[in-house]
Amino acid sequence: MTSSQFASQSSVPAILVLEDGRFFRGTSFGAQGTTFGEAVFSTGMSGYQETLTDPSYHRQIVVATAPHVGNTGWNDEDDESSRIWVAGYVVRDPARVASNWRSRRSLDEELVKQGIVGISQIDTRALTRHLRERGAMRVAISTEVLDPERLKHQVLEQPGMAGANLVDDVTTSEAVVVPAQGEKKCVVAAVDLGIKANTPRRMSARGIEVHVLPANSTIEDIRAVNPDGVFFSNGPGDPSTAEHATKLLREVLAAGMPYFGICFGNQIFGRALGFGTYKLKYGHRGINQPVMDRTTGKVEITAQNHGFAVDAPLDQATETDFGSATVSHVCLNDDVVEGLELRRRDENGDDKLVAFSVQYHPEAAAGPHDADYLFDRFVQIMVASQNQEGKN
Image 1 (spheres, rainbow, N blue to C red):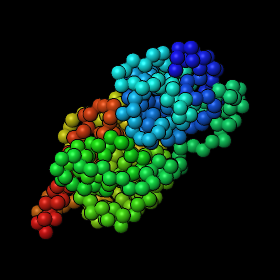
Image 2: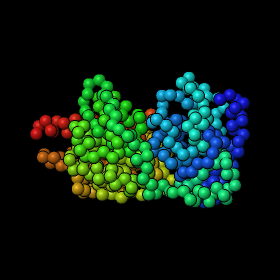
Image 3: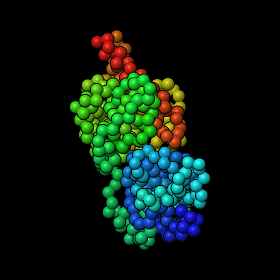
Image 4: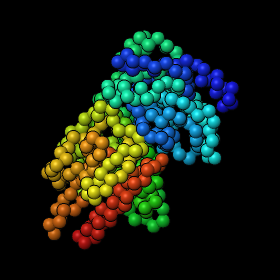
């Protein structure tokens, strides 16, 4: 896009209207039109390409709290899926020039190409403070309907995120195999609830052959892979609607297969263990969320994107149908559950870790990589399970 084209695009008026009636006028950024979704904010100062292509953001309009967005343009390597999944994008000050050596086009061009409606030149700080005080809510961005009252009526006709079953929209349609790098140590059946591309890569780098399976897979489909472990990915929507995934995971746990879950996979793990889930006021989104690993006492800075959380006791273990469950990680900002562990007592009387999950994203392609060790932990419990089976 030339500078004159950019100037022409940025002069098109646009409006953002929240369901409570508050509105912001700005200029078009990306495609023109009208879009609806849930307004959420992301506090990451970098990694917008990974954010926009994360399937977990399906049906959400993302507000970038960093004021200057787009300076590294758009490349062909950093996508976390095959498309942009956000319903809309809100930025304060778009970069006029993309200046990264890997950039192939501007962020604005990619948004136009994929039909993503956005808005710029609004007070994103005021909008973020509003969402923190009032909570995430339905929203619209439009270059077509500039009357805020009229657009608000359309917003109120849209469904909310609570009760939304969105997994089928984002899952793979057929199984995909990601080969292990180097010597193959383990095989993992990864159930795709909205998986990010970097997750199988992080496993592959550790000698894991990853079979990415559709969300509607059965326990027989998982057994057919002959896996050493099972993984449930991140994904969008309300976990209380994911009844098939919860039932499938209960079957996995009953079969004694090692398990690792991320984000939505953590919420499904919680529900499979008998815990409830609930919607957070405005969620955790960004790449600077502090979490304590209670098993080691270490604090890690994490990448997160979730609007729901597991309701589990922080101060005690819970006996479940599959073993003893404890909260392994907590958010240091608000004590939200950020991880679960499941242990069973072996024949020697020792509590053995057999399944675990975290609410955040250890695969974080845009960083930080503090939680990368969790993939090693998964390998360790799979190898331990292999050794146990060998003894038997």
